[in-house]
Image 1 (cartoon, rainbow over the protein chains, first blue to last red):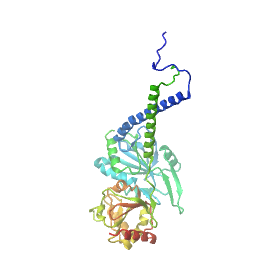
Image 2: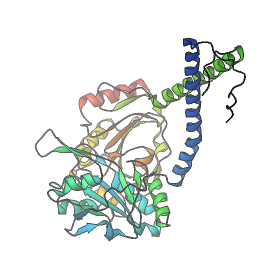
Image 3: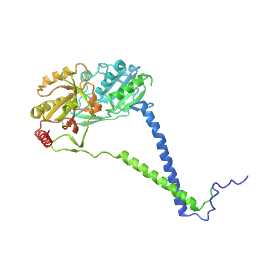
Length: 224
Length: 202
């Protein structure tokens, strides 16, 4: 077998290794590494933007959080995602007896429902209270009456809260208030959007806007 | 395997050039990271006011709300006076608590230079009725009814929680805001607002 030709014929055979040469080799490798990195960033970025352009909210299709919950609603009826087949369900955590400021998520979903017109009948808010002690059935019924009769409030029983919070990989932390009975509960302020087949699809940061939710719900209801 | 080599003049030039490209790339990435992580400076609280005051006034987007008679009113129509815009809802317990103090503040300072606008985020057909009966139940006398029936303030004014209170200057620009409640007719707040009004006459 013939000896392979030298890769770089211009090169002269070396006499001895030198620190100088190693430095330049390192610089060369570093330069190539950075150029490759920059090229990757430039090539990947437009693709990410393209993907984000399909949904206004964050697309988390494939994440399988919270599909198995079974919790009593504001009327004591046990509900699960199966009950909302054919609808876009927006699941979020909260509590009604907010001490300092109350999150406006429910109002935002109600507005998205209004924006959807007739199709709004298929957009459902599912509120899971992280404060089942103070958010009794009566309190939850009164709270829901401010928004939409089709919206649902789930009230986890003892031992159920920790489980459902875990299923959504979210967190809940009780912070004692100034007076006994007043406390605030730190929890994830985002919403999880399930498609009509009951698959988790989108993650909505709090304050993303009713228009964004309505547009994405429209897409999901259209089979996206 | 390449035999170890010593760079010729041409190779050295090429390598220098590649190294320069690499360093330029590194500088570029560094600059990108810096600008991505740069945050605006933290605003500072003005003495006497519970609001977080901004370094620069912020121009607000157009917002149309409804008055107590259901007629559209533009937020811009209040230009010319300082406005304390309180975004609230009847379903929000802390909002209900601070409403009497907002009523007293309007009684004290309301006029050509200043107005408290209590903007309710209650929606639906019953909303105006809910606000009216709540006003009546706690004896509100000086506040007018305004309704954000489209919950537009959440997105347009970034009111992700209620109450959110914005202070607008005479040009209708946001100069400060806070989330949460305050005792709005506290003498310190009244004095601070009076000082603001005096400092910027119409």
